[in-house]
Image 1 (cartoon, rainbow over the protein chains, first blue to last red):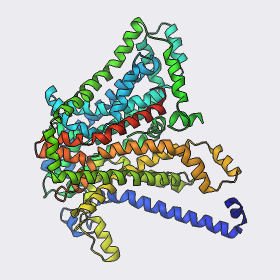
Image 2 (spheres, each protein chain N blue to C red; image 1 turned 180 degrees about the horizontal axis):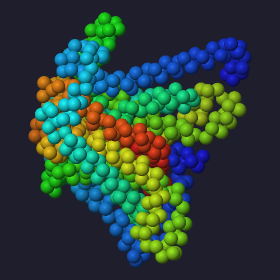
Image 3 (tube, rainbow over the protein chains, first blue to last red; image 1 turned 135 degrees about the vertical axis):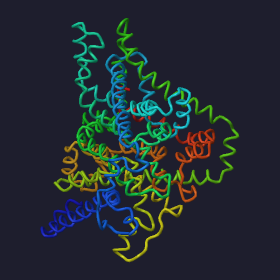
Image 4 (cartoon, helix red, strand yellow; image 1 turned 90 degrees about the vertical axis):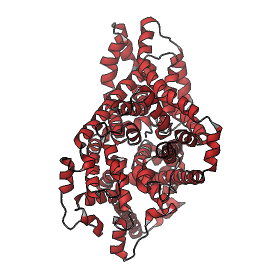
Length: 293
Length: 306
């Protein structure tokens, strides 16, 4: 019925309708851009302001200055005394988490998906369960456990925590993606006398490369952006990651917000760059798994 | 259609599960092969036992004293927190997913500027949570925040002090949570929409279905399962979200905007009552356990192999 009505519309009305829809979409796009950029713009404005300017209520600083970034780069404020060390810590945590997640995730999905380990479903169920438990709900007992293991204030505690919460997603994606690799490859290699380790190293891993990139990026960003576990486990300036150092600014009311926002921007840049570099791969990863957190 | 079924939890299920069971049932592993397989499974098994099962067991033990729950029940803050959490999760998740569904339709449009908007729109997701929420906190500052500055410039009205009231503070937290996560779910649902074969729409158009009918009779039925999975997953994520509340409203004013995830940590580390903190988190279990069960079922179906 409605098709018939559309056909009966005069051409000029049809064209006007199309233009109206187009205009509405443009307006929506405009609103989305403002909505997405406002907090980020705010961050940049504060970072570029002099300390006194922040309280003057302007929308753009009167004398924009890069001084705050200079202070961050030279560790010139007492919350930032160990900034570059902490930056390094964040990288260590991110890269170790990425490596461990990829290693453990591929091994587990290889043995369940390709070798068809008996009772392998228990492993995947365990992973699935971990995936749907909120990490913050486990934080308090996890902290206690780390005390028992004697690992608090050691980067490894955070690496362990984030690997624990990143691996289930890795297993999820790898099992999905692994299904697209024909089993005949493994079988012919086995007939040629390859042992499972060789199949894993020389057949499975190379063919899984796209999924490895997607999951690796995910694990790296998860580790870099994680706050709660970092905050609970790491308490001395030398062991902290940037996330914890950044949150320290909130401890006092007198904090210079321009330094804080400059730190925030320096901290936010690596994941943003990585994200936009690997966006296509990540998008592929998303469709593989259907859903991701 | 096969792409849809494999990549996303859409389409007839059950079928795949049966096929897979038959395939895996056939051959067992023997000797060295079996040892290799076990060795490969070991790292994850260790991680799971040491860092998931042990903490869970430890937590259950920490929160096993009934007196803790009496103490919780008598704490007036706890009731506020339960209400806050329900509002936070209920509104945060459903408004976000509804918006994500609509926006995924918008981003299906062709044209270079839509692509450009998508690139910018994804920025909140690429930004780490901490800087983003800190910026929003300052953005909403009543005296010097950018929002009130702009409001004053445009209309001459002095905006309210947003973070000084319970409901506005809670709204700000929810808004910040939506801001941060909307792009992610939009991209997921966009992927879901794109995996619907174009022929279905063409066939529907040939049969005379208008835009609205194509939405309700093609898009919605095919997206329903994915949408439900997304809602459930995000419910779990929102329930456990710590950062938005901590950094946007800081739980204030006077701890009135705290949610379950933040109050537990507050009990444990600010008030040095770790057991009470664990007990508080455990009161979410009656909601969490059914959710986890449903989600595991749904995700397993979508996965086939698992």
